[in-house]
Length: 256
Image (cartoon, rainbow, N blue to C red; front, top):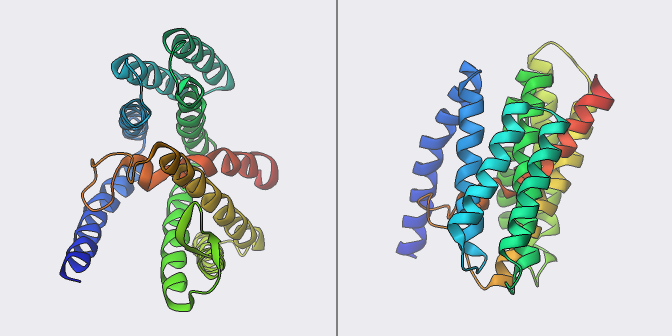
């Protein structure tokens, strides 16, 4: 019990330190947003190259980082395509005899498209990326609170035993409310924000389950121990980078 309380306190303290840093980076804008995204991509690259068994972690970490940096710097589909082609070719060539070659290669689009989409969101409507961050936090918070309180049937017991259907619905409700409240705060009563928030909460949970399935397949609990009380960077933003491309498409083709 004491260990659980200590872990919870550590998670809260770490979150209270990280949240202002992220918000500050978004508030001050360019070039801090670019540096922050490239830095996050580099940390995720290192985690992916160490949690997936291989003989050349440094090569893969560098390949993923270069891919992410190119995608973010060029801020275009061309940047995404060039970085994906380069990094996929490099990883495929180097990992030819690896047992986890396909999983290693999956890290290239996973990281590159996710981080690149966050940059696109910022580029389209810079204020909405903060709404996106709040939406992710609301989904996780709502899912945790409602899931722990209501409990009920498991969402995917073989992948993530702690997730419940009630938690998913709670995350959707919290996310929808936060997105609608954010829109209302900025002078619009657009119901689409609430609908988008609820739908994106589902996608975020899918991204979270995918990373949980990968970790279960690899036999590990956390992607790393970089963030005290939270595990690794992937453990914190797996749902965010999975959801980011969908947010970009919604902003580009539904709202604008």
